[in-house]
Image (cartoon, rainbow over all chains, first blue to last red; front, side, top):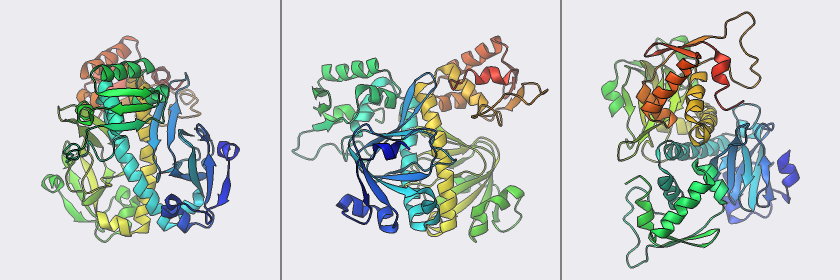
Length: 235
Length: 235
């Protein structure tokens, strides 16, 4: 299996837990939980691999994607720490999983999840949150313009803003934010249902309007967070 | 709450179960499960309503949708019998739910689900299946052409075809299928991320190619199932 080949480090789950690891309900419940460290752009599993294991992302960012036979790709989820992934309805994974950054990932036997009520509960909570994100993403893919998609993507990386009841920047604070991108332009395009050319065009347009500065390929300075938020289509 | 106003019939869950109802794990586990009958196009809950209940669709079809403030709508899921819906991460529903056909729906108190391991397990299984459908739908919305979207939509209503290992129609059987649509052209457009004009144009194109006949607004005769399947983008 891909994740074994990519595995850089395996430790017993009871040892050497960071705070993030200790917060993971799974690790506390399971004698058999192992964690592995993956380097950036490691494949954890491929679509169609036998789904014998379920994973929990402890640290780092992971993307899930699906391919059409002619090579078109859709990134279906971008996962943050705390998310469980790889739970399959059938015998095989319905999508591929790849790290976008170095990552630490806990691994569970699939049957273990089936048999443990606390693990079930944890998984259910994760799935409900992921489902709500998928609903939002369906709105983005099905109904939003290119500029709205990119603005929504940028706002997801600004903590505590754009949600219901956001009243703008804290008093006397500048309305700016620094974003470190973990995705290439192609990955962003494949996540937002756009072409790479459209993503680049929209980023240039946002620069032209003075709303962002691109400081390096992977660093974006948002000069006016409210300005970007007003382009997300939710106002 | 909307579902109370729309309720046509409330019975104790232990009484008068049809086969479909008896199969529902929830009803067997819960003294408090109630079911209600809803007429077509009844709203079960609105986005933003307090999420105090969780629902299980026993009979009929339900759509979940989200609206943008300017009125753009995305149908995010179309649910078949057996699906649990309305499980929320926060205090309120993240989308609206409306019946597309007359429906029978069981209702659970949210806390009841939290406290019952068998209900949790049932909910988890449903969520995993729904998540896989959402992944497929993200591919449709993000990467498929209009004709591929409509062909994929039609193939979802042809049982036992288009899946992995499909070898075409049963021997000596005609490769045709009758579909009864439960969605209007506008609802289909809102589900597939298209305009109503594009849906109509694609249906005309499929007619012109001799692949379908539209017998009534809500009835489509597929003249060649393999022909439609080959347009779905999965070949």
